[in-house]
Length: 326
Ligand SMILES: [Zn+2]
Image (cartoon, rainbow, N blue to C red; front, side, top):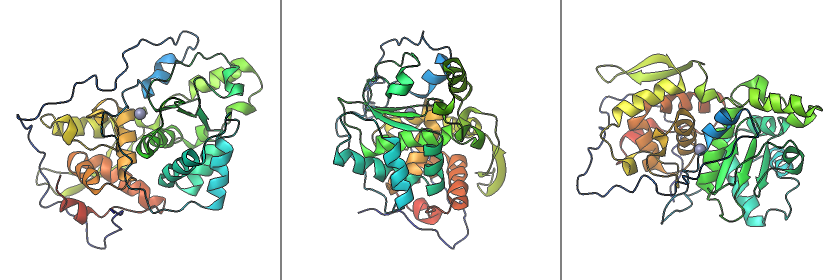
């Protein structure tokens, strides 16, 4: 079993950085349409469609060989468990015991504070097409879910496909979006259900459909300078992704970091997917994928490392990852 490497007391140095692997001409890349659903969607009923649609476009279904990664060793508090159970209320039929267990396991990538914040902001976990009854009444026209799971920013709904079971890594990825969605504290404490007027509720959903990863907020992080020494830097998630894209220009999609069952190269797709994939990879338990995250997206890695430290979450050992084969 692979466990999360714990914090190292050694200073962080990237003196002998791992070099991106060149494209192996002998490998056949998987088709770009692997698991991707090209069906056009009808967002006409909702004015905030562009932003809401941005998060998920159905590319997250893994191909054959999809698997659940080894689960994290972090334990949830009773308070966290109760908050999660509150988020999945109203499901009819109720979620199975196995589904409940898996969802709770995925939530271990968030702190108790973040989980309580999500519940307070009325995040919902909904298995089925459409939305929970009270949100469905708003007539937002949510399209048919074709992937195993999706997270709708603004609405704060983690939707599960009733016909396709989600993997633990799918849930981690979607919770990465949820973390991204509540990155802005003010937005996190506005439960949609508490707004009585339907028009005002839709306006609130639209207003909150932006994600931290696409906002202009600066993050303190570290990056590699010309001598491949770590130096301080401030950048947005979008800028960290630009650096990643430039670095992996000649790296094949299936050699990039992957949270588990995402489509190959999914982190390239958008700042939101880059964030969710990086977040779920960092808080997952696959050391090789974490090593790839460090090698190909060090700026993002150190944003997540700082975030984990600030939230007293398990911190990855840079030295161990540097010694891990990509
Ligand atoms: Zn996603």
